[in-house]
Image 1: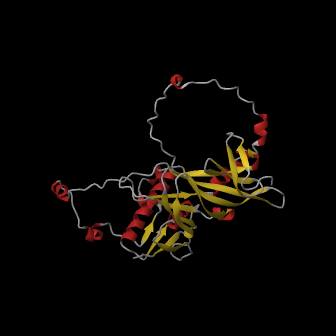
Image 2: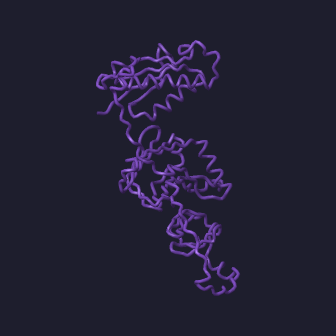
Image 3: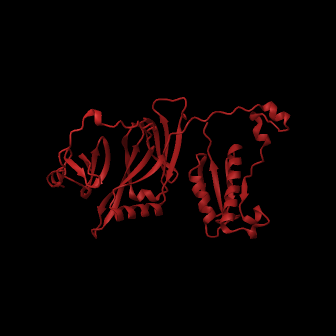
Length: 339
């Protein structure tokens, strides 16, 4: 490779000068321009000497005296950043046919704001925690999180973040949670577009503006009672809830009489809403288990339910196995409650 760390370079697209901060692989380098680091392919940068000898020299400037200079209007607009993004940099290797294949992804956080944040990061694979990290993201900087193998990206990865201000502000929210879930089909399209456009990375915005603190709204319960509403004691809220079920049948004919008029999408949405209703009731009543009858069919409803269960922290385990009563058409869910 013709570049080494510390070499001065010029970005061909913008004409900006910078330095090589890190050699990533044979085709990519990490460059630093005006204090900002970003990855670039080696054919997107060059040594500045060629530009120095080939660019046309500008004619001598006329002398301008202070009394001839026009005063510009001050820009009264508030300068703001563009929030925080998560960046994925694919690292390529060659297979036995000399074709470029993705070996892994380098994952970075980019902070475009003038504000420092503390963050907690948790990568979940197949619903289980795979990597955790807590640190600080300084203003106008990037932060390397870790590498993720390409084959692991097909295991339903979910990138969970919790941000808070490094210097607390009473006007801002105490924390902000955001989650990113990547699907294999979307990932393949991203890689295809990178190679087509000769780009080095792709990003997803996590937030554009850190949210303000939401004012708590106090409600006068006596006024509600006088208006005819029933007000219950929170300590006895379970007694006023709909009773839970240990078995929930999601066949559409069990949920509505007018199911023949519904489209397939509407049927699925109603089944999912019913599942979430009785799932929440089971958790609220601290049930130890719940059986969901979803049928066999094409497996769309079963897959949707299993995907939801992977992200629920109360679920200790779930299984879709053969039973004499339901065959393979039911999933048993087992809960675990942490005190």
